[in-house]
Image 1 (cartoon, helix red, strand yellow):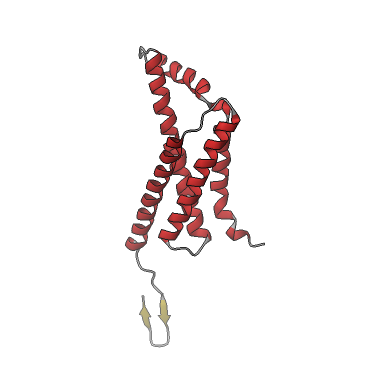
Image 2 (cartoon, rainbow, N blue to C red):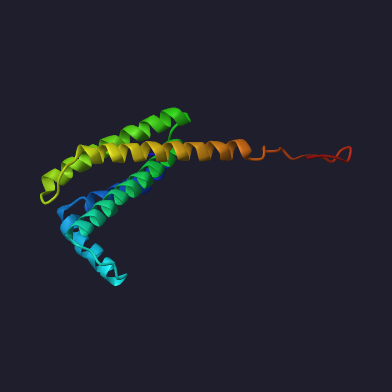
Length: 164
């Protein structure tokens, strides 16, 4: 078996395992709200129940943005290294992977109990993935365009002429 095709996908698969663990009932609002409350107490911010709920919402949605941006970048790099797809086709394939994973993640949260499934989260995750893919493709495309051309170093000793 050719392991060179498998190696680029390992970081993305490991990240998906982390995401799967974080989408269990152990990491629901019952877990994050007390932590956010302690942080707000520590910085001296007086808050009520509605402020805590708002802060929890912001932290949880920010976490969605972060983990799906990382997932999209990892899959994009893996697909670009492990296949012969061009940037657009690779980006579409990665977007499909991320959207399917977002959908399955919401189903997992629903079935795990203690968590809810929301279509708005799938939309947020897919949109975040699309933006991360576009930025990664743009940045990697610019690197290739701005990269110095590779030069062949030919040396001719016969007539003492060096070509660089």
